[in-house]
Image (cartoon, rainbow, N blue to C red; front, side, top):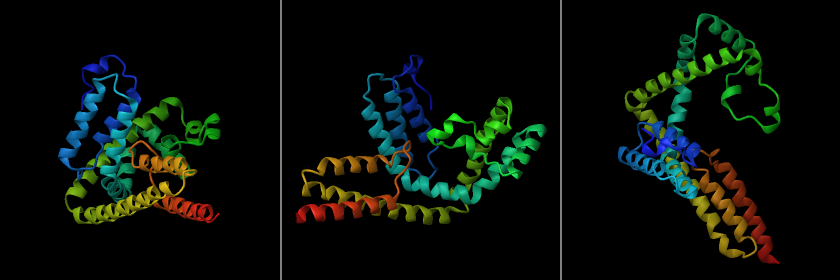
Length: 245
């Protein structure tokens, strides 16, 4: 998916649009082709229009995230089950012998590759991770590049599985996450129904609803049903006490 003519001059929301491009590119093969094309057109429209409001982009990314959520969750579970071992094999195959031997020692000694792929707490950003201490910058770069290639290869395998011999298993997972999504939608709707109960608390509840709905997005940390349950329990108790007084 190209960047379009407007990409020659840096777009004010270039970073967000790059996240959107990657999210569309990595949509599971089960995602509706027509819907994918719709989001690709939206992406190209944004790229070629530097004056597009950030909120418009943000809302589209959230919509993409919600429509693709059960597909992505089911795909992720399939990847964790069938793709991780392949990813590791491809990674080792992609490394030069010297770096491969050092990497295997790192893992054997309890090191984790997630040290460089995950988001670390702010207090940890001031000190290097074990991965950063163990490898030189050149070795780290080689491992990161090998990992990206390994994941692409593993994803090709999973794509074949979810559209082929493991299609039924994937479909079961998709239904599980679709039902979960419907349940969470219902809980957000219940939370929205509480807005009219208190003028005092309405802005706070609306802000929480907005946060939860943004959780569907492909670029946010994600929406958890347990967190929704806790929120509902809190507001049921708070509003019950408020209305009683």
